[in-house]
Length: 457
View 1 (cartoon, rainbow, N blue to C red):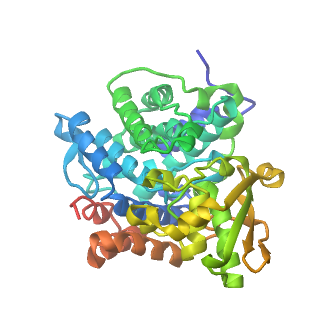
View 2 (cartoon, helix red, strand yellow):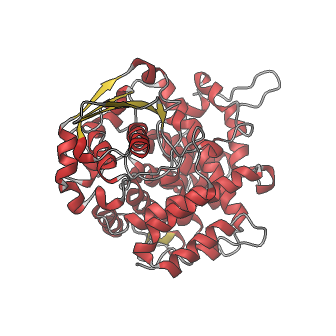
View 3 (cartoon, rainbow, N blue to C red):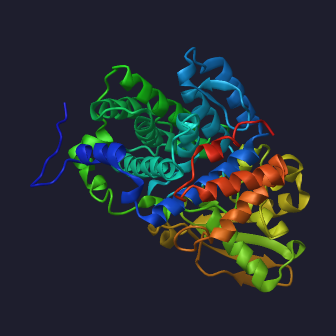
């Protein structure tokens, strides 16, 4: 059994993490971190809304009614943009699966993964009926989930050989958020972390990249496990320790807790496809803007990027899952349309002949410079060959939307509107947007937002 690590006057990683989860107040979190949390929540809810009609979300919600219900009224929660009640764990599972299957949600470079996809639905499921919860306290819980999950993810990647999906380590962050909102003790939290880590989906990310399906990034199962772990621990089920928190070799990843706020360094996606493709997409976008190139004039596209980007799906996709894990297809859509919208990665957008032609003449090559900068950066450069014999070369390009090339508050709001208006209509979408952006205000209540989140469109 691992013991708490205590150095010379230094609190153990376990002790500092327990205290951070259970004792942190909004007053001790920097205001920029709370503001970032509200914008990340807005962005994630926009993705959840846009994903509501998609098959994966529909199936997940139906599955939750069959598999993850609860006989106890206190343990039930309505599913977002559906309204049917299931267990809190089931509601988190359904919401996370729905969001995960529209790959437009936030992420964090060092984890090679995503937190908001599970933290937002977990928060909604855990706190939907708490009429006293302030907006700032809800954001505080969200920050706690992000900060714990991010460090657990980095620790996991640093100590195992496989590259696991985000669900593997997000389970630990969800357990923290649930423990905070459901009033677990320090010892119960420790066991919740052990349970969540042990049962977290150690699913191989590159297997899904090679064969894109609705499994995506393991988010649904990560949310389910994390919420379930908190319930089990509260009932007395034991599971400690969590190696990613308590092992000596992981201690270095927890030393900056409460000093460096990872939530302020997330990226927002401008396109609903895997982040690994974004640098190449933006390189083509900038060549298109600079040179006014027309898709019919293009005879070839050469992409140079890091290894994982080059391994993305390289053919014309037959499903939206394949389209979201594409490189050649995503680059071709940008070259043809100048953007990548939801209708480009689904339905008739998968059968665009102009895009298909460019997919066939797009190649991807691993570049040592870009590989050396991964995962801290997402870089690519592109050469586009034209019928008149010219070749247009981009500069080394970093994906937009992260700390390196940040989006403004206005950009994030506009993205939410673009995703939410067609599904919910302007009035309801505006009410959700305004309630989220008001959460940092002193008089705001989480119920001001949650009451808008459950009715089906």
